[in-house]
Length: 387
Ligand SMILES: [Fe+2]
Image (tube, rainbow, N blue to C red; front, side):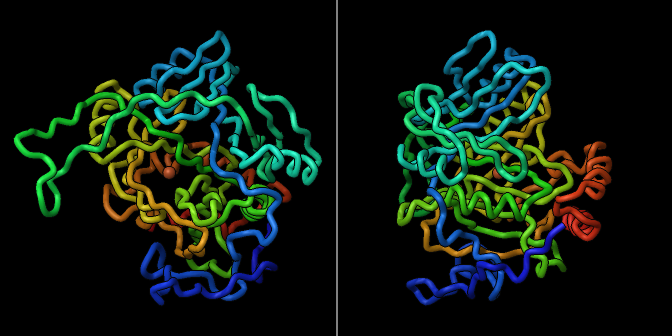
């Protein structure tokens, strides 16, 4: 078990923005960092990745995975006996690579490098090797949680597919829609792109520093366990550092919890009507709803969460925040009620607190050496999920 304060990389107070305002009050969070807290970025990262390329899963039944995938809004890009590639509408690599495996499991994420030289830099810095992978090049790393993490470059991209446009809305002054009715179709979503992945880990602090130092990603928001801020953050929403180019509020999020594993991944839709109407379609098709609709606080997305037949959670979202590199981390307490600005209360189906394996995982985590989960952590997480 480790505690995180004072953090050796020492953050300072939030700098005022150009308008002279504290960005954490006006923009996205209750407070900024206190002196000595984790700064949320590395001073000298090995590289700066530019996004998520894809996520890899194993599943025993690829037909079943394909049925959920197309109902959820993906398009099948390729299918063999042992692999299923599911893609979004924007140009890019297929965002889900599903291999046939004996049991359903998340394997790991692949991040996109800005250029080929970054793979050499990563290989030199981590003792890894650059290999040919899916028609491009890749370095295979392992994060402190144990996830295999690929960083890829030059993998051939699929061309864009036509997708729906935002509905013309008669909001504000001047109607955008005259002599025409609004009739959003109750049909599968047309997923624009992969947005983010959320991972749970028993080694949160080590994994956080590894991603910042190795992949050059930066923190948008930290959440701490209420009453335990002095022990450092327990959750981080992490974006790519694209300099002055706005990046999604989070491409990766990680939370300290008793069990290391996949929490959910999220896919961007065009607008609120698409999130709602495609959810109705999933409901009619008998899929399992987890939580929504609502609007998040960290990232501000309009969200709706579903579970696939293997209970892996997938999120539809629209209208998320984008930050450039100037925005410093916000700090707020983790709580169930703090997960959304509006919408139904977060369900046990979403938080995972209805999973009977949780107690066993907690006991195991307490007994296991080298992780960051102790009794105070568990008490803090229980308090957060009931507040
Ligand atoms: Fe999410």
